[in-house]
Length: 108
View (cartoon, rainbow, N blue to C red):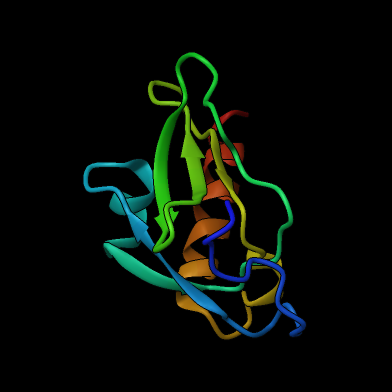
């Protein structure tokens, strides 16, 4: 996308670089209770077409897909940012990891 924001900034993964807009009603929205959050985007590829069953959960301001989900399953969420770089300070990264761990533990 020639008019996209920089999705490959030269910053550390601990630094949030742009916002994403979270889709109302998505699992991500229910989990984070926010419609927009700052993330540390660092990727050089983006989703063009979603596979059957997948839905967009968040986009950057330029329209690039930043998060996807597969509704109806326990916990299938994919994000283009790096919560492993911001979890110490970022409450949204912490919530994402906590939800993942809870879903994995419930599987036992």
